[in-house]
Length: 113
Image (cartoon, rainbow, N blue to C red; front, side, top):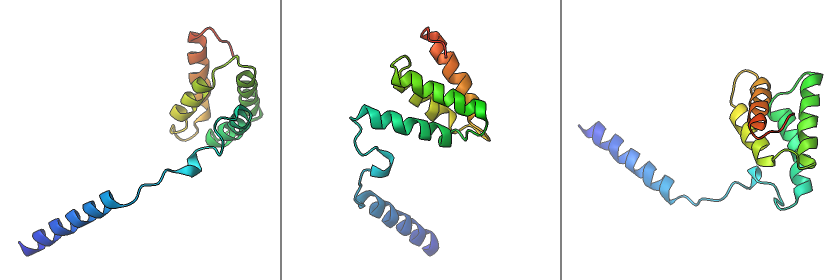
């Protein structure tokens, strides 16, 4: 009984410490100046290439086309970003999910990639 009381007290103390720890925003995940559209789009290509594990020339070409369409305001940035976030957790290689998902979602908006 004494062991279970100690383990309960330990768990309670750890919970209190975790709740009282100072919470700071994760600045590493946010761009330095999110209001600058050029910086947002310049980072988009690197984000897509590395996050989707692009490895074939046709995959790099597709990403370049997508970034070009975002720059030309033909494709909404939010659509690309949300599709990226959905696809990057797919294993082992997320790129095919991204390509298929983005083409499907863009087609619903009448946009051909």
